Image 1 (spheres, rainbow, N blue to C red):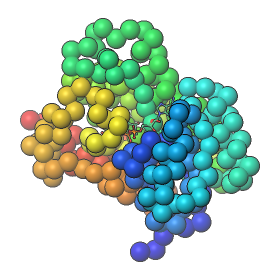
Image 2: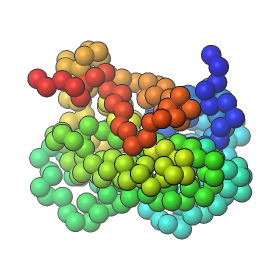
Image 3: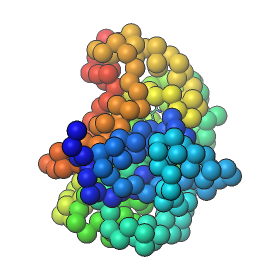
Length: 260
Ligand SMILES: NC(=O)c1ccc[n+]([C@@H]2O[C@H](COP(=O)([O-])OP(=O)(O)OC[C@H]3O[C@@H](n4cnc5c(N)ncnc54)[C@H](O)[C@@H]3O)[C@@H](O)[C@H]2O)c1
């Protein structure tokens, strides 16, 4: 298969391990000829874990730099280092989120404290604005920015709680960014993935029921895997989607279309 991303360079934030959706996106992007640089959350042992997961992908000397999206200084330092390394880039993958898991339990939305709300929105939604602003100067030829979201943004999914509110803000931010960055030929889109067994997903209360419910109800009668998100990401990062911006694409076995 011809490489759809041949000659393109991009940044992927953030892999935690080989189950991360970011890992699957990077794996597919690299298979399609892309050169990727990587962020990681500056936390003990994280750099080593990310390197190990990239080795499993066959990437032995990755460019890695810390990026905590809760800090403007950290975002700026990451993109400065990326600019020094790559010159210009063609894409950015935003595949990260955080909310205090004590409030991702069924029946706990009403008790969400202000600081938990603020942190979830800051890390999971504002971060897209922060990354896009820092990336735009090193995307002089335009390109593609994508972020990962979930159906809990538009429907009330038991247990998803404040993360659903954050995903609504993320998707809305995606549209406003698409509107402003269009004249720079930078496209911005989201992928709404069905449940995938990752570290973050395991923090969501009722996740097992989400998997079971998808198998019962989704048109494809099965759950998706991370690789399927990675393949759709290749489409959005590549020139195949050159006319697509401000869009949300579901990769969820069709779950979202079913009413009953
Ligand atoms: N797994 C699912 O079922 C699913 C479904 C739909 C959408 N998503 C979304 O996909 C994205 C990736 O999640 P995942 O499921 O691969 O889980 P994951 O745990 O593998 O990845 C989450 C990443 O977020 C990073 N992160 C957390 N706080 C950060 C911060 N302050 N600064 C920088 N990075 C930070 C973590 O280090 C981790 O690498 C998230 O946006 C998630 O909401 C996941």
